[in-house]
Length: 114
Length: 112
Picture 1 (cartoon, rainbow over the protein chains, first blue to last red):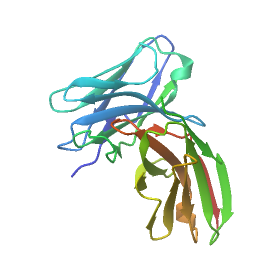
Picture 2 (tube, rainbow over the protein chains, first blue to last red):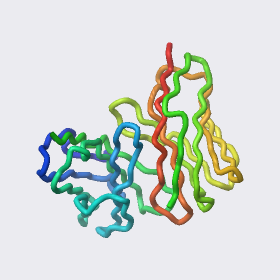
Picture 3 (cartoon, one colour):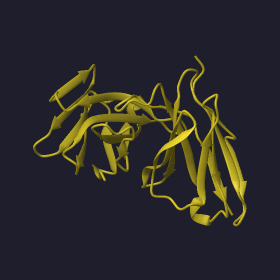
């Protein structure tokens, strides 16, 4: 099986712009979660989608949004970018999203905001 | 919500030494504790996990121990090798939750 695929791998944007990141989960996986990774801050949870519905949400401002399509692919959008949004954005998928499941991560999208 | 503290943030050892990374959690309802390893420039991958009904779990050179009373768990790596160099993340999941809370990570450096 192909792994979790994230595109693009790198993005450079300027403040005020918006950006959309894409995540294709492992075939058959229905849960997709998103994380922001910055040096020293670990993995900060953004949100999780299951069967096209947002099931869980972290403590990020409303500028961060996402969605999931019927094929389980997910997108994350950040509007009105700020310098502090520069980070590695990781998505992870799991089979049915049952509690305590192993997460399979993508390689991430490195976002730089200038 | 759950809060996970991880120490140390950086750990430097000589090849062949043992390495120990410690995490504490706040919510006694947490009952699943995975560890992820992220090599430089690569994706995090699960290396070992433990559930609250078990006190210790081993897999070759790595082991995880759990002390539910004290609410802490640790990753032990014996006979470290340069390929063990990576960032290690602990996590805790509250029973019934789909989302683990991660620690801030430990950068392990193994010197040859």
